Image (cartoon, rainbow, N blue to C red; front, side, top):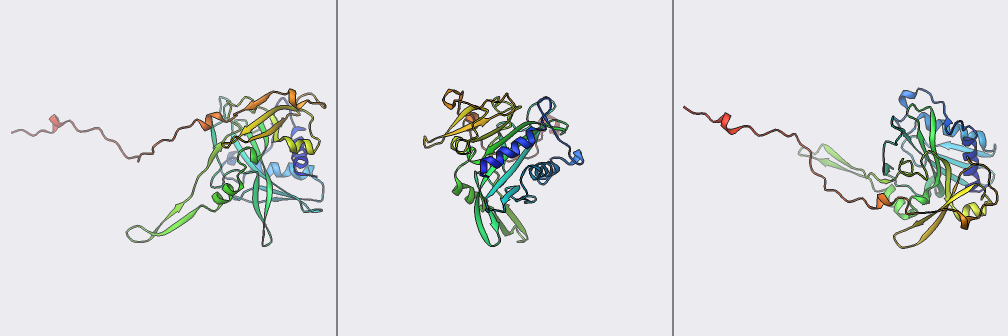
Amino acid sequence: MDTISIVVDIYRQLLVQLKNGVIPISLRTSAIVGTVQDDPFDNWIEMNIRKVLPENYEVVHSGSLTTPDIVIRNKSNGSLLGLEIKKLIQMPNGKDPRGLTIDYNSCLPCGSALIKIGKETVVIPCFYLFALLSNDSSSIVSLILMDGDFLNYDFNLHKKAKFANITEYKHGPYGEGSIRHRRMYTYPNPLNYKLEFFHLRQIIVAKKQDFEKASELGNITEVIIREDIFKNSFYYLIKDETKAEQKNVKINELPVLTNVFKDCKNRKGKERSASMPFLEPLNNKENDKTD
């Protein structure tokens, strides 16, 4: 099985549970959902992956604060796939809680990831599973399995970011403090409710050539063209199997989406000012002391 075939199998395992437009989920102790990275939702996804993959596949949960969250290995031929899980919980009004961007912590997204196999460092393909949960965390209302390259294909930038954090010691007048220089990356949020081509859907977003190579062109609904800052155009397809089966899709007749994250590009830098307590000035007349 190649990368896209594994992703499609995981997608179908989740989709088979679809009821009334959402995917019901059962999590332990809903009160702790979203409090840590290694949370019950990650474990629920891992459980579903184990159900669908053959016995010769190994599924490794990386643990907290480690990217990607899950690594899948074919024990027969050694092929590997990383899966990073990003989850948001729907607000009472139905919107997502983040808007344009979402935090990727100190490791920006990428379609390739670094892992260790013994002492060897290995580069593996990486997909992202984006899930918008209902306000009570009882179901997935938006599901997107997305090639990480859709967000960032610059692996060198990814590697640089991964090792950019440093700590400075002997800080302060007594030399006892330290400063943790930790970068925080915010990149596009595919779960943004304003993105109607993603919102409240259950879909895969992957490279056109990968779908073609795997002969997975059924139920392709849209083409997305991602144009980078160098005017290169990369073609991605949306696969949506919640709709009636469509086998003979003509790619050149499908709707084409461009500049899907344009609002992120249009953001303007803001000067940060120091926050401090604010008091109204005293009334000078009241404070004048007269004989």
